[in-house]
View 1 (cartoon, protein in one colour):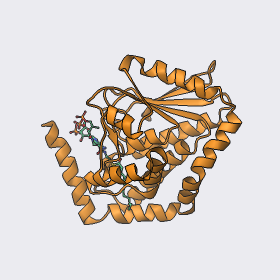
View 2 (cartoon, rainbow, N blue to C red):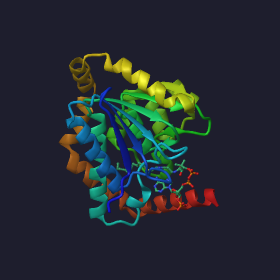
View 3 (tube, helix red, strand yellow):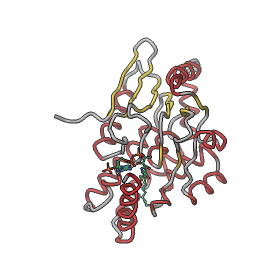
Length: 261
Ligand SMILES: CCCCCCCCC/C=C/C(=O)SCCNC(=O)CCNC(=O)[C@H](O)C(C)(C)COP(=O)(O)OP(=O)(O)OC[C@H]1O[C@@H](n2cnc3c(N)ncnc32)[C@H](O)[C@@H]1OP(=O)(O)O
């Protein structure tokens, strides 16, 4: 039986779906997870009754640990290529969604987890000092691709992105709010009700006008990836399968395990 990585609950009275990521221990984004996520987004997109999505996690303390590193380590070029296509697809579906998307960030959200959050229209994060969010790729010795970078620029601006990406910064909730990486902080118990009330404000805007506006803001980056999608895959595969990059990933994974021990 196929595993479910996400739990989708649709409320027909409001037209809002809640997607809960549920892949313990850290909601890492594996090929299967990403594939299921993209299918769920597609289904909701086609559902005329669904106007908004709240993205959150049912794993305690973690929104998402980002891309599953084991999908990029010691794998064949073919596997890496398939994985990267699934990462692209997840982003295209989320960033390009015509629905209202709100991230209720109830835990840490490094790298690909941060990408998911900044691909939404609005972000609310639990105000717990140990949680962090950011694109930390350089810390793993890897490089966030242009569409990760451009998604962040559209969220926090050029200078802050340059600083943030080069240093691979992870922000705690007050810092994330200050730099604009999240829009609002909330206590854990009120996170979902606040997300719902923010959603109501967005639902009050005529869909058509909001959708065209959203598309106008986001289309240039989406089109840029669509134009060079296969080249982006090849670029990823060439980069990630290099011995030096594989070594960096191995060291990073060992560091994660040691930190635990
Ligand atoms: C030029 C352009 C070309 C293209 C260039 C290529 C671009 C690639 C872009 C990459 C984007 C990414 O998202 S790369 C992924 C980056 N992600 C990260 O750096 C997150 C690393 N993880 C963490 O920081 C932490 O685990 C965190 C999420 C905060 C949770 O901390 P905790 O203490 O609660 O839990 P831990 O003990 O650390 O983790 C529990 C277990 O999960 C594992 N684990 C944690 N994160 C994992 C992950 N991302 N993938 C797999 N496994 C992970 C740990 O190893 C543990 O395994 P066991 O010990 O076996 O139990």
